[in-house]
Image (spheres, rainbow, N blue to C red):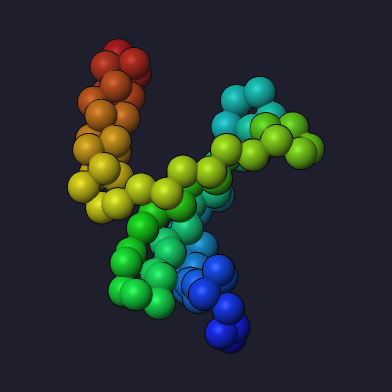
Length: 77
């Protein structure tokens, strides 16, 4: 634990790791900040050193998930 306000405490919980096309890896984590804020962290690893990290609130994660499910259902047929 740190008392430095520049580095607030957060608790992370691994949720899933997915292999994606073209050698990418997607990791999902639940993150709870010491303030009580809960977010979903999406981390996309491309190659050996490039990362994209998105922190999403619950409404955004839900809308994104629903949009992906809608697309996946139509792409399977």
